[in-house]
Length: 171
Image (tube, rainbow, N blue to C red; front, side, top):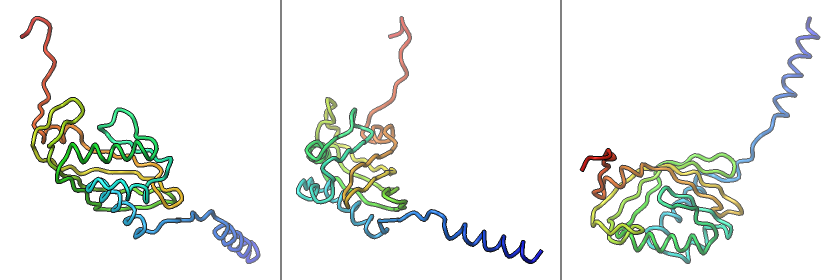
């Protein structure tokens, strides 16, 4: 009985010591530095800083984009477009969680819509949204960034209204 018990203890200890341990290659501080630089890049339209934090093969997916911005040049255009569309644009990281090469974050963004949003003219109204992002890091730079936030709330703050479709024959 003692030998069986001892065997089970040793087997359990061996199994626990051989378990896969994920190498968290990024600390919370490092993640915050990268994300704060991304927010600074977007807030100040600083495309030179973009080169420092964005991987050459980066892909940014945001709710207002019909297609992801792929590659450093497309990402720089997105940064400039954001600056031209929103004055006083500010972003702030609130929470960060890391697992391996991925960062989950909660952030806020605010600004004033002073430029056209695609084909929609500027409204001059302020907005503030809270969102979530999943960011993947490769070689110390952002290779993927996918954000999620309430697009309806954003448009509502800019003064847009959701109207139900009209039935045929109604005017």
